[in-house]
Image 1: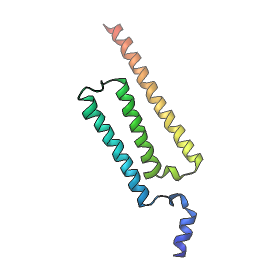
Image 2: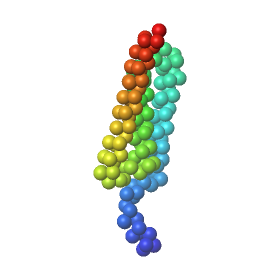
Image 3: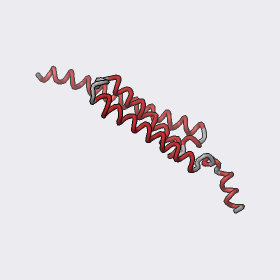
Image 4: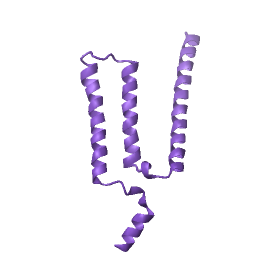
Length: 118
């Protein structure tokens, strides 16, 4: 028992992860997923919302909230040191930025190369 307490004190980053927290986060994720399905299957299909930029932004926002909960609780990033969190976040931002740049550049090339070929 003594070695278990010492180990827990040395690695106290998981002290707030208990069954109650896990189930709470699970139900948050379930509610967000149900909201996404409600938007897709009821609001968009019945014509209350039009498919387009607004619906896509809502989906992206809900997905980012779900990603936050998954990464912070189930991947235990919430309990890590601040420097590690910043390093990981900056890396993710650069990867997303480069993906957007590649998509923009690919779209530009597609538009201009199609005009030259035709």
